Amino acid sequence: MRKIIISIITIALLFSCFSLVFAQSNNTSQNVVIKNNWKTTDYKFVTIPTRFKPVVTIKEKIGTENVLFIGNSLCLGLKHIADKHSFIAIGGVTLAGLRENGAYNKIKDYNFDTVVIGVGTNELGWCDKTWWKTELDILFDAIYSVNPHATIVIMSTPPLSQERNDQGDNINNKNVTKVNQYFQEFAKEYQILYLDNYKFFGDVLNDEISGDGIHLNPIGYREWYQFILEELNNMYVYYNLTLV
Image (tube, rainbow, N blue to C red; front, side, top):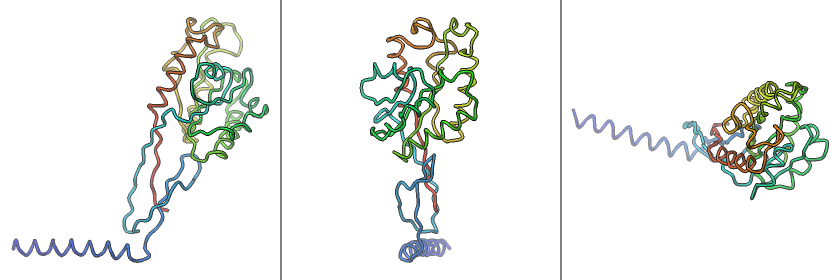
């Protein structure tokens, strides 16, 4: 009986091997494509038999090479202490102001794999969710038109100091929280990454690293910059390998 069982198993294995060779030798294969998180883009193709349909998730580290920062005066402050990264930053303007001042036309001038977006402070209290969605759509399209495979990271808007928060205008931490809620929702919707600056700043900006309750001093920018780099080094993107 034991010999019979061994013979059956041997025959089954030989049949499986023959089937695999037969499937590969016949025109029964399909392309496998890695799909981009933002838009369907063919990264590379491999050929496998159609009878095998593996689902593979590829994990890729973001890292800190070829990073382009796009943003407001806070990003401009980072630019002054950054040692190797690229910046498109204009002080005192909204996201729409960046676009209207031709900032998006400069994206093509840079070699980048990752784009870090730092905005929100200049829009506090008057830009609603629809406005943000419209403007971010335009920015994302501008980025992907240059590099369809780019990884986009949107940073949360940093908090304000308690003194600046208490001045009674629209520039307050309640509105900062609202904008960051939008950003978190957009990150899920567009399948981009969200960098939470509250891990560094806390709920209120410390006066020791700020002069006006909004912007940072050189020490603050240096420490914040290092935090951002550490966060990027701990971020990953995932790609699913699926049959099409």
